[in-house]
Every structure is written in structure tokens, then in C-alpha cells.
Length: 402
Length: 44
Image (cartoon, helix red, strand yellow):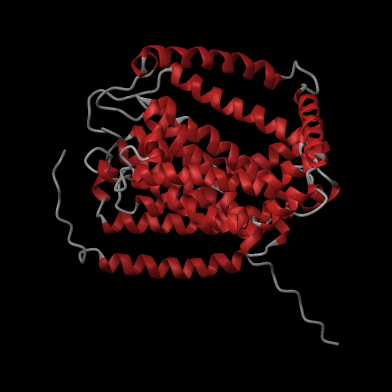
């Protein structure tokens, strides 16, 4: 009887606490709120029309181009940019590089939210979104499909990332026993998460293997899965540098002094990792280019576009990362991170729809509704991220490492 | 566009070996470039 009363009391305490935490904090009329609120509301209206009247009502998709901006940017690009979570947890928990411990929580939160929002965005792009449950409930599992792997991996990885982040939630809620139990299973969850990430990052590339006749030969390769995996490593590192720089400025009052002191060293460490990974990726691309004898393909506009991507957004930022690290220049490293991110976006969009049906007379381009819904997803994610960061010990190291 | 082209995998082997050799040379150089300079040993 006593135990029931304790549980009931704790539950009502938590609900009261949660209600208090839900109340908005800080000024409402900030530039971000002024821009994001109308975009989110417009996106909701667009989604109403999408589910009421179908994909054709709001997108430029057709029978020839079934995958557009939502899949190309939200899912294929967004998941690559969320790669920082598995890279950092590998470095901290497996390689035992404690230097990066200060950014584990925020990076895992970013990864978790990215998977929830960008993975779920797949539902907007499915003609019959209710069929998304089929791979999970056993209605036509489709074992031989890459989509089957990706569906299960997304779901399992979200669970893994939630468990990795849950000690922070427990700390915030004041549930010490649960925090200790969840902290105890972190290493196992991290190893599972890294395995899942490696497979579904490359799995996203494998989705395009069957589209050989449709994707421009400069972008199609039987090694797309490996290229997707390697590029997700430096995409994640560049994203951490980019997001960390903004968070460091916006939430500076929430970061403890140790976090401020170690920030520069962490950024330089990430830059070094990104430089080496991009260097390897660049030579891998060059090797594939030579092996497939693609010199003649460089003679037209597509060739120039390919060189812009590979030289301008892979080789140049790789050299800038190395130069910035060597000469201790944060500004160069930050510019390199932005270029690397643009390179990833360009690469994924090129494969998803820009060079898709490259020989066709009429090309797909996203409608304004597709762009608004994508912005809606990004802004909503930032709102949720801000709520977590301003309530929970995400940017501070907490009372114990977790 | 559903045609397939025959690719002789041995035709480009020479260039591929050269590329790999240059990769390893440059990779060693890059790692050394990114390694912090060693502190001079104390002679006492």
C-alpha cells in the first residue's frame, strides 16, 4: 500500500514538474521565432493538402521522378548530417577519447532529433503512408529489400539513441536509480548504435544501386554504399562543428566554464578527423573515376558540375580543415565545415534527383510547398532542440558523466 | 538508357597503381602535417 502511495506521489510530482517545464521561457519576439512560426504554420497547411488531396497536389513529383526533395533532402541528406552521433560516441566510449565527452550529450540529442524528424519525413513522401508499418508488423516483410533494412535500422537506432540520451532525462527528472541503470547499459547501446549506423548509412546509398540506368554515370557507382558511409563520417564531424559553433554562441550561459575552455580544442580535433576522412574520400572518388574511365564525361555541363562538387566541396574543404588545424584558425575550420556540409547536400541531392533522369527533356525541381515543408521540419526540430537544451543538463557536463 | 557497357578492368590498372602510390605518399605527409611538432628533448 505504501509503495503504491509512493509511486502515485512521485507520478503527481513529475506531472507537476513537467507542466512547469512546458511553460515558455525567455522573450517571444526573437528573430528566429518571427521567421519560424509562420513557416511552421504554412507547412502544416501544406501537409493538410498533401494528405487530403495526395502528393500531386503539393509536389512536382511524377511517375518519372518518384523521389524528390523530401526524400533527397530530409531523409538521404538529413541522416548523413546526423552521422555525428555515432562518430562521437565511438570516439568517446570505444576509443576512450575523453576530450570529446563535453559534446556527447548535445551530439546524441541532435542525432536523435534528426532521426525522429528526418526519418519520419519519409511518411510525407509515401503515397500510402499507413503501409510504412508493414516491415515491422510482418505484413510482407520484404527481407530482400534495402528498404526493409533501412526501416528496421532507423527504428532500432532511434531506440538506441534514446537509451544513450536517457540518463540526461533521468537526471532532469530527478530519478537517480533509473539514471544509474540506464548509464550501465550505455556502452552496449553505443556499440549497437555504431553497428546500425554503419549499415544504414551505407544502406541509404544502396537504395540507388538499382537506378544505374537513370543516374548520371559520374555519380552512380557500385560503391555508392561505401561512399555514403565514408562521407557520413565527415558530414557528422562538420555538422558538429557547425552546430557546436552556433550553440556555443546562443546558449553560452548554459555552458559550464570547462566547456568554454575545451571548446576550441574539441573543434580542432574534429577538424583533424574531418581532414583525414575527406582526404580518403577524395582519393576513393578519384580511384572510381579512373577505374570507370570517365574522362570523356567531363566535357559537358554535367562534368563541370561534378568537378564543382568533388574539387570545390570535397578537396578544398579538406585542405582548409588541415590548414586551419595546423595554423590554429577557428575561422578557417568553420568555413571548411560549411563547405563540407554544402558538399554533402550537393552530393546527396545530385544522386537523389538532380542527375536522376539526366537525359530527360523535362527535369524535376521542387515546388515551393516541398521547400516550405522541409523548412517546417528543420524549424520544428530546432524548437524541440531548444526546449531540451534550456531544460535539461545537455550542454553542461551534469553531476556525473553519462 | 538500359544498355550495359563492357569495362576492361585491366585497362586502367597502371593509373590506379600510380594513384594509390600517390595516395599513400600524400597520406603520410598529411598525417605528419597534422601531427603537433615534437617538443625538443631536455638535454640535462
